[in-house]
Image (tube, rainbow, N blue to C red; front, side, top):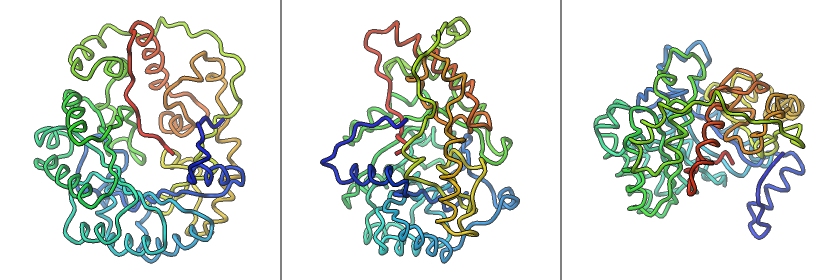
Length: 378
């Protein structure tokens, strides 16, 4: 089931409705590289070259451009470039310029911490439609703790100013882990100073290829910590973390839900896809590893057709979710997230379940609980 309030006066919404009706691709995420200028403790993709070697190879600029031509012919309008850090991809400047000339609307997902003059120059000449910048803290000290870069915060602020100076819309997303959670109130003030609302990611998942390649599970907040931080004011983050020590989900009765849909389709299931650095393709990055298709080998249209064939099986709602009274309000309980958490899109992720239960319990005891926005998939 797709839940969205459509605005038929917006051409983007009308395009998406048509793409859904026809089950045609409208957007695609290109994960250009696993490389990054940072070494974040919790990253789900960053690897050294030797770690990545068993899982394939990065695609060349020529290969990406050929694939972009296939995407264009298929009707794709929106491209999102990501990584790793996409600007560390060898040949990024040339690839970005050629994609821009092809007429795609390009969003750049970036940490904005490692741009050189050629990268800034190509952004000036071909401004992206939108830039999504991840924040890892509100000081150089926190950036060093999380990313390993002792001047990462200053670099990020400089590039936020750069994008604003050339008129590129920017949104900021704070990735919250144990090592930076105390910066939460400072992040809010920083974004307020820029006049930019921020989203927050606290749902940290393990490394896509090998759990040992990151410390994600040690870094992420517990379900109780996530929920307590979510329902409290940012200035009370210390109190929220203390409160989490006395919160449990074991005794929460959820009852039985009725009239829930049989499938939990998302817009991306009908109109989007993602292609990883090694050429694997799936509905989105969360699904990578779940029967990937190979567009560089069989062609994009054939790969797209395979995804459509297995759509119904992939997005079938788990029976355990259908029997849960919280199904309709469970945060981030999508098939992709379930796959990330359990390796099976048909199995609920216990971490997400615990968070959802605790969050509902806490919201019911607070009159004015305002849950921070999380980044939207579409």
